[in-house]
Length: 64
Image (tube, rainbow, N blue to C red; front, side, top):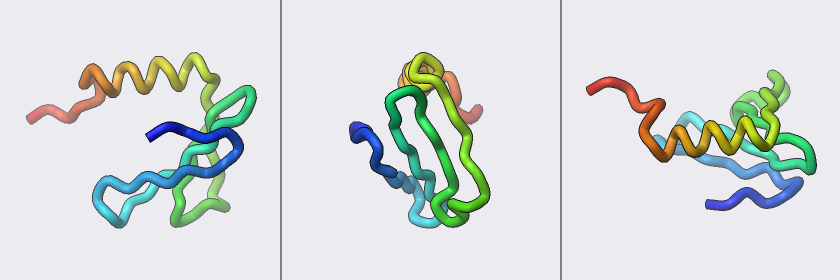
């Protein structure tokens, strides 16, 4: 899935916990889709790239 500029994209792995991501010109915003008014977390594009690369490499996987 690719992010589209200035459009909230919803992702749910288990059907109940949803995250929304918004790509802007300068940052990437993340919020809880069930409580969008609770605030957002922002990342620079470089931070987001680093996070997604780490995710692909399994850096954030829970121990088995």
